[in-house]
Length: 334
Image 1 (tube, helix red, strand yellow):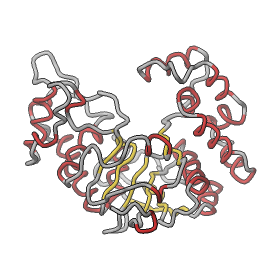
Image 2 (cartoon, one colour; image 1 turned 45 degrees about the horizontal axis):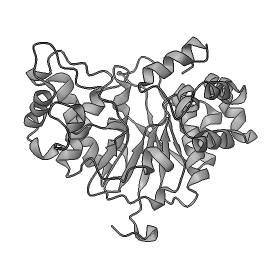
Image 3 (cartoon, rainbow, N blue to C red; image 1 turned 90 degrees about the vertical axis):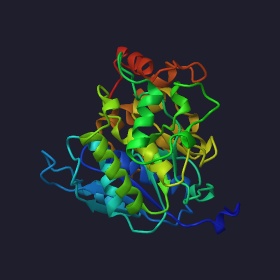
Image 4 (tube, rainbow, N blue to C red; image 1 turned 180 degrees about the vertical axis):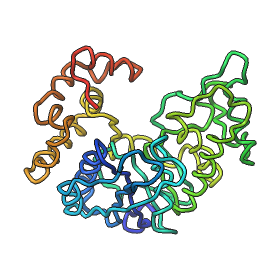
């Protein structure tokens, strides 16, 4: 693909927004995109699940001020229906929402708890070879005492879906070490057609949930189902682990912070400064202060107290330990 950003293919960006915390995260994402990537010319689509039998309550965004603020940031609301997941597995929203996206138009999906820090147009996407985030821990699978090892579990999945297992392996990593096997964080991924990608993603995820290979007996799929299915989708569509150079997404161009206390604890100064800059204008502040997390972390300054508790050069290796220290200090909030 050309090194000239102007020659690169146009693409759309999708996030998922719904009532509660995600509506405020969607607003932060949109504000960060417009702030850090003002030349982005694609569509920003906020996919919103609609009420239906798979939800106990209405999941849609109904807050008029949030909707108005999203419109002011040129974000488009994209309603979609849940036919497979819903309240039982909200992570499935990212899968089913793809089927409502414009067909045949390249796309990048981001988890809503993400900030854009740089120019998306400058990224060297090759949409014919999909990829996803490698900022991931070895969370799945967890081999059982009498079951197959990690390699056997992954091989069973590739066999079930008619995929070549051996070509997915990173042979520089030891056998049965999780990094040897294709595994992604589903915090961002991209491809050439969201509907083709989504249809395959839905087929694989639903099959794993409803009729998993016997080798997966005893494995948990909540919340890991999207991350179990995603490598199979990407490998089956001629993608792989090295589609995006390291240090850009999940680096200088985007930050998947997950929760605001974690952002303040471990992310870069650039991410913290951008968050506070985009949250400062009164037109957004009056909306964002309705979020208890934003009110405490940003507007009341608790985030900066969390930041002072950690040395970013000597962070605990596990996120669980970071959360534990924040909770002990009484500063944790979702």
